[in-house]
Image (cartoon, rainbow, N blue to C red; front, side, top):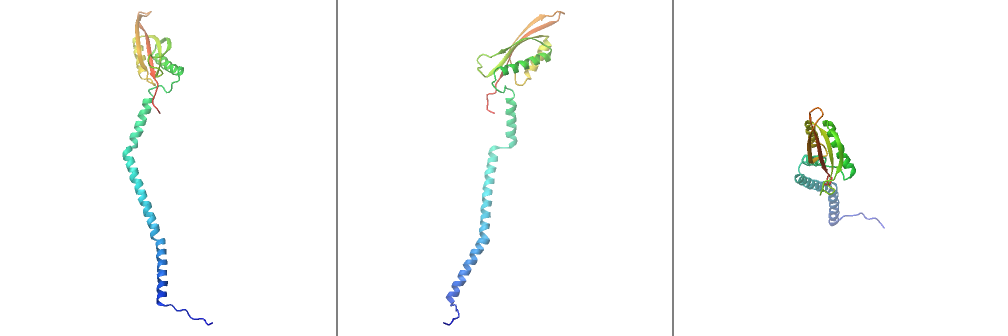
Length: 185
């Protein structure tokens, strides 16, 4: 057997050229357009996310507005008693009222816990009797109006009496109430 040289016919050469061209196109497709198309898809996805975020920002408004509203709600909440803790709330109120009386120069005669009628468990209070001059009582009431938690004077009974040196003193019985915060944090 003698080896014969390989000869290509025109059809064989055309088939080989077509196969090489197809292989080159596949390599070209893998090397260049496929990664480019995937990057374009990622860019389109990021653009959709940006549009969604811009819509959310427009719907929610400025962050400063939400922060200011939160701070306002927290400030409002500080006007109330923090928890329904029974005796300790009354003790807190009594301490605040006693401190205001002492600061104003009033003598505390008596103090007792007070439960406002019809308030259920929404409020706690104290009824306190004090003695002093009219200016001291006025200052005492001003201190109560600035207290935190907010104290509400439910009743005030003022009785005048003559002092030992001829000065006019007053006995005052004040009923003070504070309300519990009932909203969610």
